[in-house]
Image (cartoon, rainbow, N blue to C red; front, side):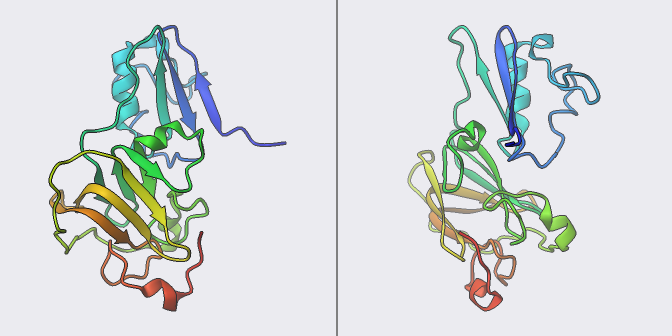
Length: 217
């Protein structure tokens, strides 16, 4: 029997989708100061207790793409952020927002078109996505970004996120990178980002995956 991964919470004006393949329980949804998500309640998500705009606001807070929504009656659905941004988390994954095309995302991962959390420790069992394995692995990187990039003429457009076999994440498209300190550190149109956890130039790849024997699609 196949385990159900995507749950749909129906509402009169908007439906909310929760994708267990992407969720790492950051808690932005449950801590929102409204009645959309309430832990311990059955069902925990009730879209009709808030407005469609509040649904959109809370869903947009989810950094992993595990939450998505669909308005009914022809209302506007989620649109990509105007700028593609990679945020490097302190001892954690890469949060990416924007107009995304992620190699490895299933066709029914609707939230992953706009928001994802990508593994950079090398231990996720759900690559390229983070599954919180960095916690047990003791991954350490404080999120500094050294390279400033070559810049770009205008923001926006699709950010393609590819995977080099047994190697880095390959970004192609306009992208800004934010260090864990909050500094906008990098602007460019391409980058190779470490996903093995061994680079000495994180978040960028330095070829360390070869000596480390890293294996991933």
